[in-house]
Amino acid sequence: MKKNIIFDTIKILKTIFVKGKRRQEETNLRLSGKKIIALVDEEFEDLELWYPIYRVREEGAEVHLAGFEKGKKYIGKYGVPAVADLSFAEIRSSEYDGILVPGGWAPDKLRRYGKVLEVVREMNEAKKPIGQICHAGWVLISAGILKGVTVTSTPGIRDDMENAGAVWKDEPVVIDGHIVSARRPPDLPEYGKAFVDALAARA
Image (tube, rainbow, N blue to C red):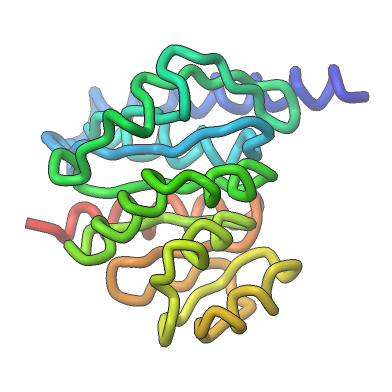
C-alpha cells in the first residue's frame, strides 16, 4: 500500500515538473529574479513541500531547501526525498523574498530550532511572504507571529492557533497581509496560486 502511495506521489510530482517546464517556455515568468527558502525536516508532507516549490519554480523563482544539516537527504511521510541545499545556520533572510513551511510532522521538529524561528521572525518583520500549510502553523506559533493574524490550518491544530492569538477560519486558503495559509493537500492549487501572487506583488 505504501509503495503504491510513493509511486503515485512521485508520478504526480513528475507531472507537475513537466507542466512547469512547459509553462516556463510558454509564458512570461512572474517570479524571475525571486529567491525562496523552503524549510525541510524528516516526515514532511510530500506534496505540501514539493507542490509549492515546483509552482514557484515554474514562475521563474529560485528555491533553496534548508535543513539542519546541509546535503542531508530528508524523507517525507510517503517516501519522497528532499536534499537540503544549505543548513539552517547558513540562511540569510535578507537574501530571500519569501519562505515556505511544509506540513506533515516536520513542523514539530522545525519549531525547536532557534535559527528557524529567527528566520521566520525576520521574514515577518520585513513583510515578506510566508507560506504555511497544514501543521506548519506550529512553526509560526513558536515564532510568536500569529497574534491577531487571520489564518487557516489543518483543523487538528485549530486550538493551538487560536491559543497563540490567531483568528482561525475553516477555508481552503486564507491571506492576511504577507501570510498565506492553507489547510491540506486538496487545497494546494489555490495555495500555490495565492503564494505566487503574494510574491509577484512585492516590488
